[in-house]
Image (cartoon, rainbow, N blue to C red; front, side, top):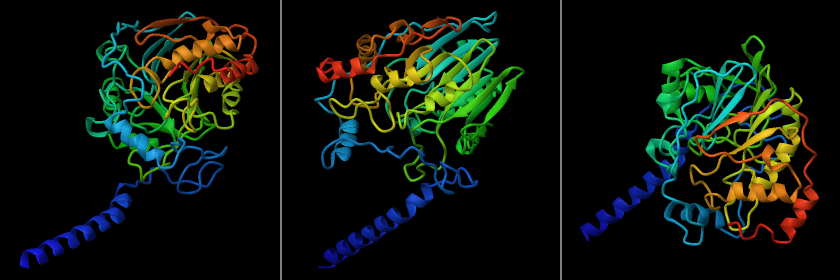
Length: 388
């Protein structure tokens, strides 16, 4: 009887401790990264998408969100198989690029090196082996397309938001200690980066900062969300970027859903875009899904490309970390097929290999707009059903 009472007391106190933890821990993990006035996308405590907050993981069926997360952690025999590793031929970029040239090297996921007008620009730098805290999270299947020791001196770093596959504090600290680059991000993320001893400049949507004479960086709108610990959700802002360059602007979408679809035109209004980095992957969280609230797939990426003025573009956010359901190379294959259905110029939005140095042509007249009705007809006919 004594053991039964002791066991009951232990169980009771265990329940009490768990209840207290459920109450206290979320507040402990919450962080206030930014304080400022209420705006069209900040309510005084949290940021939000002014075009509607469809930023949650949504799949069909009751309880399917939990089911997806379970399968993501423990495996799903129905989803396409990814390779364990992908062979990469790493690039060794030049120290600088000038004389009107622009060279872009996709390092993997959302990390890209853009060299133009004597500037070396790096987007969402992630060299770590996992996209998550404490060395956990999705494991990269492709090594970075440039070894860190072969990376030229970086002048400007753009950090779109604080998700682990975009904000890698270990990499940022190494870059800061080596090069002291100007790191530009959106509101609140400077506090997260500053926690690693790294200085960053945080701007609101629509603001810009001078980098060098004739060169500037602007923080522009996107449609996404933020969190490092779940309970600190949307305490910092997410963004896209435009870098103003004498030879033509560079646009980096970061990580985004389509939202109202008006934000690409807002970025294009800052000047002609010579190169755009547009995400196409991690869009499918169940079979047949073509987009999610916070991630665009190939179809919506074409809409973004069109809104930007149809510049030369490189698709990103695929083939590095497995974050969703679709196959390893489904995003670029689907993009090429959809561009064909839309009668669009495929060479203007063509996939690059990780580690491939792409010579970007000069500013030129855009091709005709894509035929989205033709694309919709292809989709209705099941043209892309085999691309899982």
